[in-house]
Length: 250
Image (tube, rainbow, N blue to C red):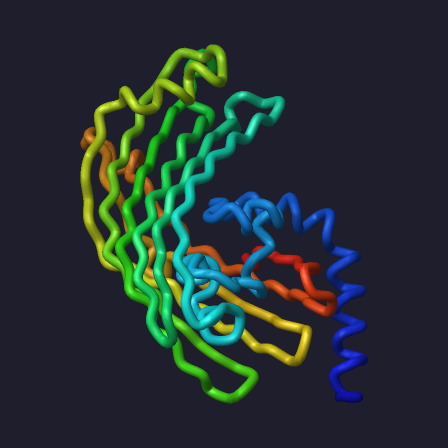
């Protein structure tokens, strides 16, 4: 409609202007799903397959198809010049959705290196979380939907001091650290609005910020799934072409 065209033009200009910096910000989210990873993680306002249970639960109504099944695995590694800020991540997911419900299991593993008090040592952290969830969605209007993924999270956390050395060897050795096991309830919430070819989305992940204890008694080594809020816009004006941008909200 005529009222939508100016909005679409403004959104496209906004996306193009932010596309480069957003690509870097997107890396703070785990790259769950090959399609999302291929788009640099700019998927909150797209969410058009069963990985919507992770990226934006509301996408099961406005962004996706009536039926979707996804089985996927991804991994990546951050390699900054400062070795004490390096990290590696991997994710695997199996998700099934058919309106208005989604069922999913995904596993996230994050290995990170952080500075230690001793300049010759680094702290190596490993957190593996298993998320089993059920997603429920509701259309509020023809253009607006909300969704929630309720999930049970089981996590294995490990932390230890290691001698400064080769980054890849240190990260690969994270699996040898003794770990502790913790389970908790958590939830993700998503909202999506659709106006023709333009979509906007907002997702809040890890609402309860669950903590996971390591094998040590030091409370400083408790690892937390931090709450993450992300907004996104997308434009699908040409079949087979999607322009999208996401922005992390502090």
